[in-house]
Image 1 (cartoon, rainbow over the protein chains, first blue to last red):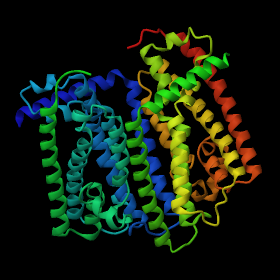
Image 2 (cartoon, rainbow over the protein chains, first blue to last red):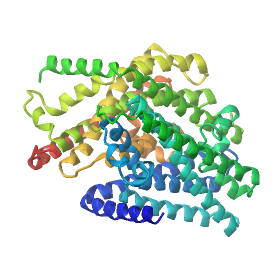
Image 3 (cartoon, each protein chain N blue to C red):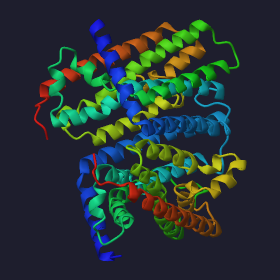
Image 4 (cartoon, rainbow over the protein chains, first blue to last red):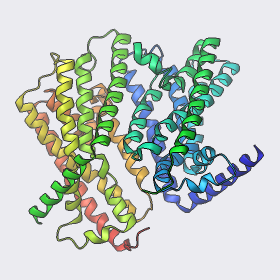
Length: 262
Length: 270
């Protein structure tokens, strides 16, 4: 564990020094994230001009949900997204070899090696927005509920990572990754919209096979409705199952990996 | 200017795009199905929570049709795969070979972009007809051969406007290593302000004159409103005139930036 932490600290140091070399891009990325946040909040604000509730939530509740989405997305962008972007290229070019010979887990190193320092500023912004949405919420939420909400958001980060990787790992067999990646980005819309708006089979699929509804919507639900053992067990069980499936698929992918470049 | 050369570039690009069939269908079917299911859920939730039968002049079916045609229009207008082509040419030094071509760089790239639209246009026809058959045509929507013809012209103008709007942003690559974030940021902003995420009729009344004066409404909102018969002939003509004005302005801007950028350009690449 100590070795992994030391290694990760080195990744972070290297990423910050790299980000400082490309300063203009560093600020462009911050600008992009600010616009994404504004567009999302404006989207919900416009919808609430025409309805008092959406998926059973008021605008104040929706703002807390949006804050949660920003935090989960920012953590994902900071820790994993650069790595996921390059993984299909490494697989197709045979560059995974370099990481298979290292004395640490190949899944770990290929998932977190590139820490996005420029997205880290967005993470700070996202935390600020979430704090603001919680502070302006009209009724008392309670420290314990907020703490549980934050813990569940971290579980959501793990689930989001596992789901995203499940879309990328098939590159070991398919070689082409463009279509799958685009499809993955499209499905992330399910995470950025409240689960309460979905009905029937779609709602069920979003908490089981494609559990995007558990990433932010369920933690927000727990915050407003109070914790229930069934919901908490559901979140942890699905996240554990997805992570288990991810490690199995990764091993199968490595077995199929030929190392030959294409 | 050589029209035959530009036509050749257009047809080569069109054939190239249509050859990636698997990726094309995963992208188009999957992406559209997901986006539509999300918007369908939002629309139904909004109508049922508000208890209204009409919001911003749209019924549930009208709003769903708006969203589908806005998404399909967005695919044609944005022509995703060449969004970063110019900045990439500047970054890796490929621009050098275009400098030898007997036609201006912007015209060559536009011909490539137009050729690359073949799959998106096919999607538009197939999914557009399917949507009309599945959802039906509500009372407030009036699609006629006239609105289709007006739509085609608006779409062509929107595509040109989008290209010219992005070119100055991409030309920032003469000074910066990576302009991807700028292009994505502009995509986020235009999606909201252009009516790709929601109909602009849903925006507060005070914001409408501002939105009408900006170029974004002419990218997605105007073509779709024209197609659905929700814009008058006068609105359409005024919209096209404003969009043409923006195109002219952006071509002056790009000419100015390009001249200054060329002085910076080394052609070395990465």
